[in-house]
Length: 601
Image (cartoon, rainbow, N blue to C red; front, side, top):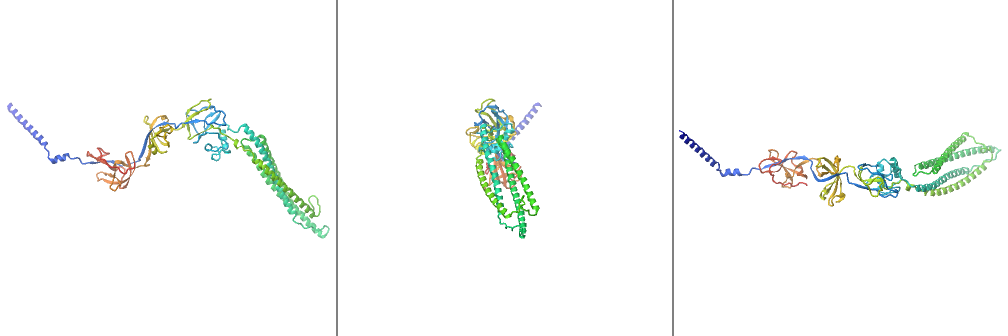
């Protein structure tokens, strides 16, 4: 029984094995069509990327070092005014220098700080002309002192502003020497004497002209040909007496009017003299150097005398007007001459008065000519008087330091108190951090002043923004390699602790300014008519082409503007084909090469 069952199992196993062998052989047999179908390549699919809207920029990347600006060595120029140059208070390292501040002192004198591109190189004083004087005037104006016109000419206004600046800071301005002052005062004494002579001659001339005018008027009135009256004691004489009385009354009114006119002229002249004397006294109070006590006393006495003469002239005018009013109010002819009661023949007295008036007029004319000669002589003397303009406030070389930019920072001190200054006193840098680097000739052509910069410190990860503030026009300046161009970038908000650190700067040399539509360069192709286009894959719909105008190309992207169809952010554009058969956004597989003609580099 057992043997029978064993034979059954062996037969069954043989059947199974035979079936498996038959199936395996059948599975290896393929028809030619099936084999071709299985070995054909897959249908290619497109690789697409979305259209972006962003700012594109082309950049220059360069390493730089953070520093406190380019150092400037401060060397004092020689002065013909300052006799010694001993450092009496030293600069303080790390101190910020602002406009108008004192950097240090030399032989007890200040070294002021002002802004200006032209360095100080000489003594500055009255009569000096140049750009350094203009810088001085502009600095004085910024500090609130009024130097007058900023024309580069050191005049009296500039000297007064300098003196006010020094005095406000507690310093004594440098003026003329004692010998110069003594010579100036002696010359001014002679000049004031000539001015006094001139004043007296002008007063005499004015008085002579007034007397001459009055004499001419009186002679004209008295020589106008009065009719002789009849003898007194007759009827005709009585009538003639009345006529003579009327004539005398008329003469009194004429004399009164002449007196008023002369008094008015005298008042006008006295007022003018008083104003002139007061003006000379006021000018003396402002003069630099001030006048001596004797000169000031003389001017004060002249002003007092002029005021007294003006007061007396006004009193005389009042008396003349009162007398003229009395003559007018009397209304009846007087008998005889004033104070005499004489009934003398009026024609005789008239002739005497006329002759006297003519004589007075001749004397007045002579006085006018003489006074005019005195005026001319005194005017010549006064016109050659000394000028204090060459002896005014002066600034010795080294008392003003001009720096191109302020504030500035004292970076290093070369001397100590008590040292004689024979070389550099200190070095200064900008008070603000800058990043210094060097550019190749090609990059230097692209970078422009004012260009935006992104700054990153690789070690600390600190970031900041900045702007290009200086780029050299010739290679090898400021210590860079002879074939490279110095570059300075001023950062905003950079940590001062990074001074001396190396940073990476990304300088935007070209930008779209605002957001634009951007696609990969590979998305561009050229149509048969020469236009540039992109292929848009809108979901399951058939692909379409959109004509575009390419713009700035940067970092693998290119700005496009649609000119023949719609294109917007998020639209999928074809950048290649996926030979592996898998459609991918962002592109898996190896895309086929496709032209990017028309892109602007």
